[in-house]
Length: 241
Image (cartoon, rainbow, N blue to C red):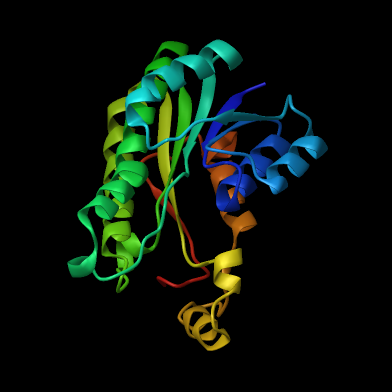
């Protein structure tokens, strides 16, 4: 059974990705600070051999080398890494505390880069693997109040393309997915008029389902994507069309 690490894999998009890849026959290893009730329910349904939980705070970047080592020792070679964990932040840059900026950059950019460093070393030794980074359409379009978040997601796209060139000759594919506004608990609580405005910007006039993004990640992990690397797969209902 091939192992796939999914960071932030107990909630939201990460949970959907973990569930989807586990259903596709991989062992999904969800790395997050804590379990959610939804994850526990999914774990009971799929079984622990298909879905595993590893508690870890990804903001503790100094411990990421030890995490990578632990995962290999506990589960064996890693076929895939999905860098999904991240935090959103909104507000005008001029008024944002520096500590908040540093926290977003640390978790959204620094942590996935460092984790990828140590996981990719093992992939190189094992003869191949797949890395999928979760970006955002804000990296293309910009969005008022999301300048720091957009900066971190833009950096992941540059990271994806460059790393793909570094490790492609070693049989490692590196891609990214860029979701648009997704149907989540947070967006469901938006003012109805605001929801309508956001949905109206997309060609299909709707929000994206997290399951659709999870399936895109699953595709990039699969055999049908063996010749796809260094690219960004956008799943946004046509918001950037």
